[in-house]
Image (tube, rainbow, N blue to C red; front, side, top):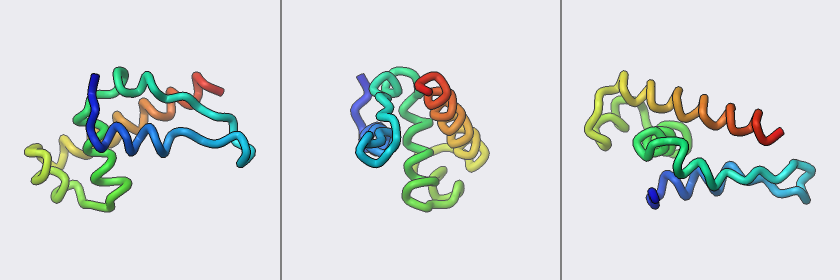
Length: 85
């Protein structure tokens, strides 16, 4: 089972509290549904504000690959939210 900082960040941010008027969404399966590389790219680019180029250097990939990973991670999150609704 993946257990890295990116996964923990996504899982933490993807869970909403009912007390805030939002239906709680369980995203535990995301650990299995989305590859760690996608989650790592999403964490670096979206949550930490790195450019694709900076994230690419950190992850040993090309900037284009990072943009693709971020797009795919977002797509997976949207799909998960639609299924949960």
